[in-house]
Length: 227
Image (tube, rainbow, N blue to C red; front, side, top):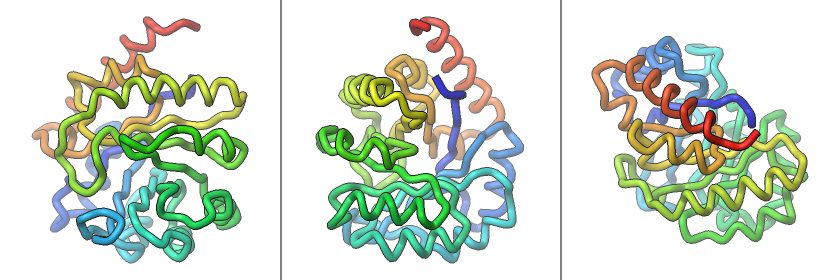
């Protein structure tokens, strides 16, 4: 399995100090910055756009992982690629041509991901595995931070992990929504290697303590997995 990645979501950061908040979580041991983009159309909330991504790009060398919850999606793919994103993922429901949107991400020099909502079936993955660098599973319904983890996401993660292994490709499996220290071991045991956490990290007084505790739980879970 690929090395574990912890990606704090800046949706839960203090936006009055966003540059400091980005530096702080990376200094505390996080790997990526997760960037939630909502358009008040595909999802019922409005968050941040490419100008914010461009503004934080010089702040950190860490990869910026952009999750587009927007429709239509292709113009935003190009805008965020220009703004300095490293990973860009989108929902299949938001694209008229999923394979074309994935190809667009890769042509713009970014890693490409597809995002599945809790009730979205995994079947669409079968036809685009050769274009994927990442699969992101939502363990809450997208739109707002701080929601509770949906347990059925674990079964879905196990199924997607089997698809990834069968493909023989190096594809990351990411999960987003309600991930905390007390459930991250179960998430890791289901085959996830990339963990988005928002309020669990940014809502804590000590970012490093939370990230260290998460890594310890992931390590314990991985010790129990077959090799």
